Length: 271
Image 1 (cartoon, rainbow, N blue to C red):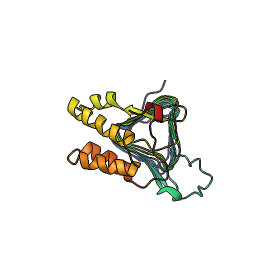
Image 2 (tube, one colour):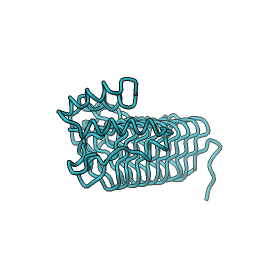
Image 3 (cartoon, rainbow, N blue to C red):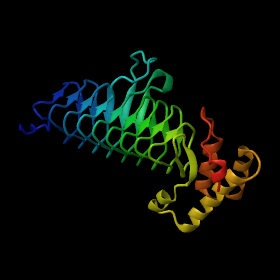
Image 4 (cartoon, rainbow, N blue to C red):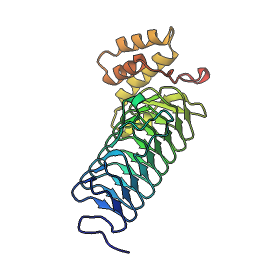
């Protein structure tokens, strides 16, 4: 096998001369890099990776074989507009992952944060906004315009409907169909997913102590098992926990405008 050149590019790779390649970038065998691509310092494309369009990949991100990044969106309304795909630093993008740029109908940019892991076959569609430290397991898919908060985990073979919001630190169980917004710190699962409680394992991993978790569980109970409308319960929860930023963040998420309904517990599983 031929070795990389002094510039870190394998001789079988095709790199457009106008692409912007950072310092100490490695581009492995049979990669194809388009003219408007930007690769950050220290990024690695292992082999057989295709990056096209107005795609920017951050420093230290690694991309594994057969990933396809930046090709035109899978949206019939896309008319060739100069949209973009932005991928953050220190991400791990495994085999067969696909990510598409934005569209005129969604802000023109698909954006992925830092330190994310996309396992084999994961898909990020046009106009998605993915936070930092997000994990998408094997073959998890985001439809267009999905927002995913920091530290969220989307389980394998799950599908998230367009325009859905996944809150920070939420956990989506494997093989779930997500049609409704999932609150921050929530745990959702099922063929048509329902809330199943709070993502306690994720909270412990992030360093939340026992009193903080107990406070969040109490807020969850009041929000989904109390009396009155959801709006009334949300206001009572906010008033009961005025100094708790986690609870206030959940209330803000519930009260924010959204085109999707809120994912809630099944009545017989309510806490």
